[in-house]
Image (tube, rainbow, N blue to C red; front, side):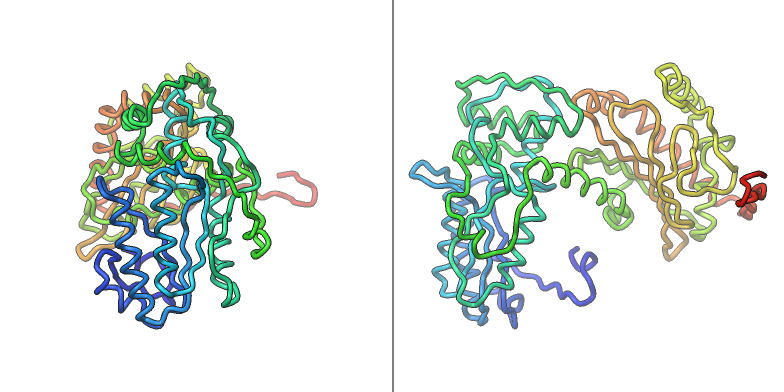
Amino acid sequence: MLASRVQGSTSVVGGDVSDPATLGAALANVHTAFYLVHSMDAHQEFAHRDREGAAGFGSAAKAAGVRRIVYLGGLGKGPGLSEHLASRQEVGRVLAESGVPTIELRASIVIGSGSLSFEMVRALVERLPVMVTPRWVSTRAQPIAIEDVIAYLMAALDAPAEVAGVFEIGGADVVSYREIMREYARQRGLRRWLIPVPVLTPRLSSRWLRLITPLHAAVGRALIDGVRNETVVVDDRARRQFSVRPIGFAEAIARALRNEDRAFAETRWCDALGDRPAGAHAPAGTRIVDSRAAEVACGPEQAFGPIRRIGGDAGWYFGNGLWRMRGWLDLLIGGPGLRRGRRDPEALRVGDALDFWRVEAFEPPGVLRLAAEMRLPGRAWLQFEVEPTGAGARIRQTAIFDPLGLAGLLYWYALYPIHRLIFAGMLRGIAAAAVRSPVTPRAPRPQPRTNEAEGHP
């Protein structure tokens, strides 16, 4: 899985920290090992699993002659430290006791896609217009952008040999979880009301989180136990040792949202989903992805033909009456509807209007991505990809929806049976059109010449 995502100069070697015998080959000829492992997703005994994994890894690193270990742990101090944070810090001590010089970077909440704390915060904000909030939302934290965490990790890689020990890292701002929620809501254009209720216990909070977030209840409880502890930098050794100057939490959230937009724009769902079954439907961050594929007995050029001609007078290959109805509704609420059609029945280019979509990417015979311009409680894209196979080509059709708050989620799931019917029928229609007699692409319509000097046709 990883091999397809790295440069040719990078070697991917398998290893399992729970099985030290597998680590020798992975650590051979390694100067610096980054330890970014945490087993909190285990339903029970995650602290024991983390302790054993770190001990095995440290012993294997020592035996392999590794010169340095860099570990990313968690901030927090005091006798009332949660099991989650205490385990993170115990892992750092176990690695340091291995005899391999260890740099332990202790961070607060990491702002970026995939960070459990960040995913918890934004799931709450996205899904709840009114939040009954326990005491932990007032806990102070020092959130740090994922880019700044990576910068610290890279700085640790290049640090002098004598540098070792614990370094506390955080962003430029000390804020509460309430402030993080409000800033995220502001940047997403959501109005949210937070009502403090101090009687919610960690157990009740974790059960509540399980109902409205993607987190398992056990993971949610461990996180809640952790966020009751302040995670603020009190030792500025990292600032003195490294040249990293972290950004504030508002810019960190803005970057996280921009990075997700860019990552989705660059995603090739043929690669990301591979041979997953047609109709694969899953959340990805704040977005919902519905993807399906069909095999056709023709080459990519011919398979891409119906995709190139989609919309306008050619229609959408299934349920054109439903598409027209959606267009009329869109006009009634101030959207463009289907009246724009398309500039040319055969030729497309980036930026073209296509009914109530806009061409965002066009790479024949491989990719067409359309961004929705109809009125929606969120943002939507429709992407088509064609790739060659041994027997012809595979057409993958992917609908992506980024719901805006609870209204967006209700919209998607209320209409999902209709969307599923339309998307499945559209793919069948495209596949059927692809295997009919090939149509030679028509040359683009000639454009009138323009006198650039005078600006007259």
